[in-house]
Length: 533
Image (tube, rainbow, N blue to C red; front, top):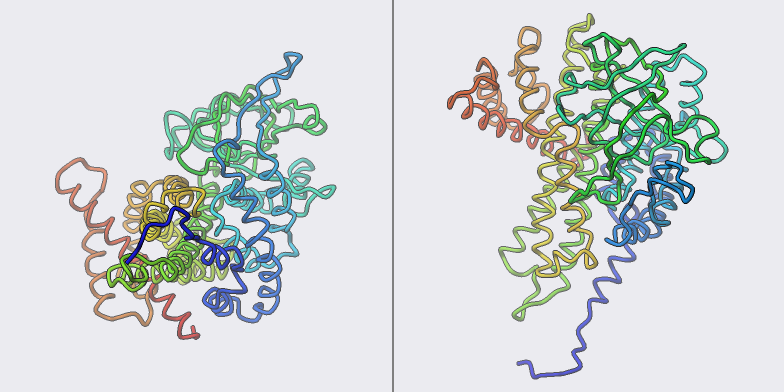
């Protein structure tokens, strides 16, 4: 029985006290167990650094990320200063600038930083969603990979030193600008032109979707004058000595796009008119290097971020359900909601375990996936490289797609409060997840690419063998079903031939890709829980 009381004493303070004091790493036994499982002999050092970083991520950086996400603090452009000089200044709030400076000071890409330390730190950071941090981290990692392989001039070596090891107490930040208005994911259709000029190149043309437009350097695809081949370049946002003067390197930022998610991250339309650019690698291999190195690393990060966000969402939803009562019961005691919470937690854990397992496989490969199926190397290594290439895409489409479903399910636990952005992080994660699903190749593009890849690899790596190698020790019936259906679907000539039959095969192959990715995640989780590889 409830009598009226004009001074309603109800408060959320008990839940908030728990949430605000939770350390993402130190208070999460599952994450610690996952890190221990995959880091092996490096665990002690990775664990130490994870605990130090988590003290910042879970509290100070969490609060900065929350503050920067306020609608009134979204980035905006100032195109001219008071004296009619074109400056194209991107104005971002102090919280974002502070967060960015402190995070990049972690030296994530230094030669001194263990690879697993970087992965764990990025996972922890991703529990605060994008926050104008995760995309620049992913882009910088791709830039560093290209530079470490191809930097061969004083200019490119200086850029590598700035982004990897820091310069004067600051670390350079990278971006990647591939998309043009006519192509999107169709990079071979790009039209931006690169004209040679005294040992470097100058870029001319427009890039239409440029995230991390505030970055110091950008990986840019362009076609050398007179060539149909796509090359890759690194372009400074400012030439030496010009950043303080706000003189851009031969380009203008036409506008910042209005996105539904990742709103703290400035995404712009950029017009190049003679920007100085330095080639990275052979001009004829730009597309392969971008896909094999830059996009692969970004897709790895997206899958990792999906698991991180889901883990935080599941944790906070479960705790809220244990705190909140309705109709005389705790929310957690309602059978339907209890089942949903279990599903949410399982999905988050398997996404996390799968993401770490993917990195484990990736780190074991010399030169990663290397960007090409046509490499002349031993069959065993060629198979492993192909498996990793496809797994990166499988994990990306599954984790990115699941992220929004899980965020929506998590929001439902909070009822009407679930859509309030100042009540929980889940609405922001939902919006950011929807954007992340489209980056680095939307689902339909990657599924079509995988079908083509499986066909090209059929002679040296049949689908049945790939399924067996990906799921050792998994349920034999599941493996047999996936192998049989996969072989049948890959035998279909093409997913781009317009016909009703093709549409049906597309739907089936899409679902098959999700089933295979989830089977890998479930297997990874079972191994983590068992504590043995």
